[in-house]
Image (cartoon, rainbow, N blue to C red; front, side, top):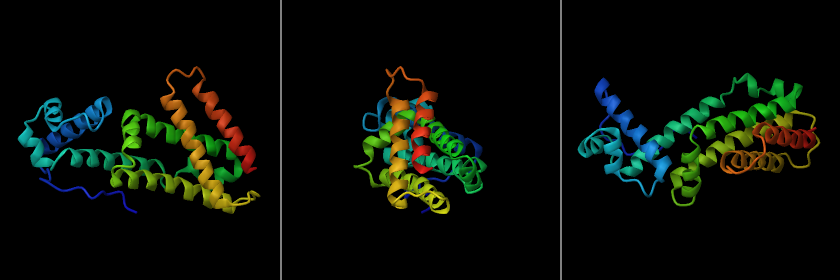
Length: 207
């Protein structure tokens, strides 16, 4: 599945000023969606923070939803760039040689990409069941990690009973650990210690 969303196109910026205005609108949208949430943010507020007129905003984006989906599309492209096929930090060679380091690399990469849009990611979780485009992006990301994990387990000498089920549980487990690190703000546990504990649990199971 490609990373492009079905976003209604408005004016396509070609001049530097137009590109800058569009970027300012997206930056303002990201800031407000993260601070206030999608439903409590208006296009008037986005235009004000971006420093553009509301008419200018609507020349680039049909509505608030189009702004949000453009932001989400940019986030998804960045996610995919973190997990390209030639990434040595997540290669099968490393998985076979040092599964603990591979698992740690995977968790750190996922934590980095989610932490960079921490509050937006929380909003995406809220919108998962109400906006199919959000669900599709999140499911595509989960499936990409699950498929990679499943293929590595299949090529290894692991004796797990059901490879497909195991890979799904591993990805769900990692997602839960990342959510704990990101959103349990009153948790006194050290982030690195949580990651190490999770890596030990998964590595022992897969060995």
